[in-house]
Image 1 (cartoon, one colour):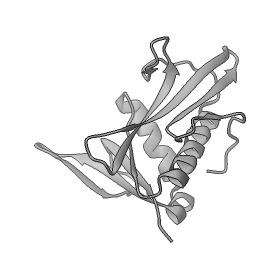
Image 2 (cartoon, rainbow, N blue to C red; image 1 turned 180 degrees about the vertical axis):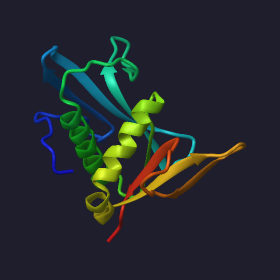
Image 3 (cartoon, rainbow, N blue to C red; image 1 turned 120 degrees about the vertical axis):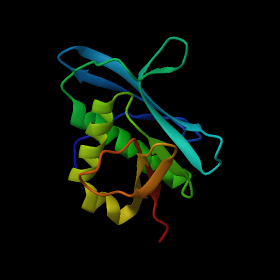
Image 4 (tube, rainbow, N blue to C red; image 1 turned 30 degrees about the vertical axis):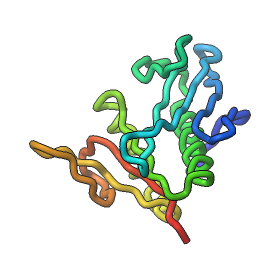
Length: 152
């Protein structure tokens, strides 16, 4: 993504945790990104939001610090860093609300050509009894997404 991202991203040694500060009209707001293992060894879940004192991530608070694109670009940068260290792993992500999932779908759609050069991107659809992953297509309402670095 060719958007400005936050500098000074703090990255854990295993490339699973990231921290940065959102800056805007509401001040400096800490943000955290975590890649968490799932029951499927090949899939990690991307969690993003405001860190809590207990060490978890609040992914429901709306800070509205007028830096949405810069935040999304920073999260996308963390995907690049994660994939560099864990190249054969899929990353699952979805929004905590339908609106946030729509925002992620729009961001992927706008940057699809660029992202597709380096990543395999799947959209997750929910039918009546299960979930189905298909190659990402613009215009579909997805439940979530899977992304993986293409191996050259």
